[in-house]
Image (cartoon, rainbow, N blue to C red; front, top):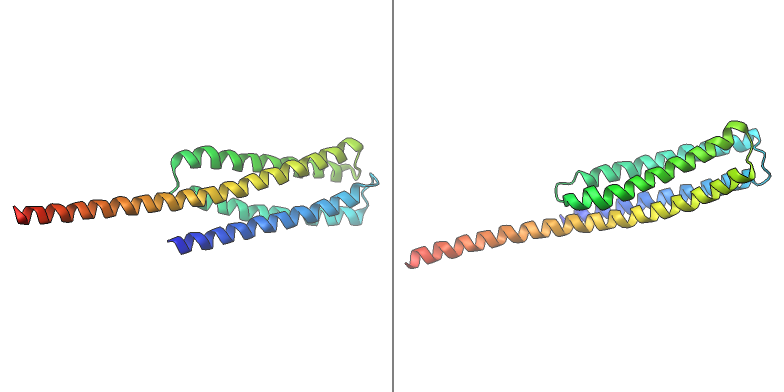
Length: 171
């Protein structure tokens, strides 16, 4: 079971790294395109492709979240509190970033306030992704701890049963 959790953690880490790479690419693509405030057709195509790539990576994160939250060994309080909160914050940051970019795409221009919003949304997105990444690690640790505790309880019950059997045969 521990190997499976370690492998799963590696998958989660790889998905987070993929999103980090996509957000870096998006930052370069959009940041370069909006510098002059006017979005040319070629720049729009690059930005739209970057958004598609980011959405694809986000779907991987969504799948990891679903798998973690549905694991029977995660504690309810962790799942419904910390994990849900960090995932919701990430979703909000993702949606806000995409909306800001789409606003610029819609009018093929980037005003100063839109450029500032983009920079702010990138910072918020990066922070939310970092928090979600840490929370995924904590969730995997929570699952591992709960699995270990369940095994310990089962062993204690088995040992107590053996002790009772021996004691009955002695009496």
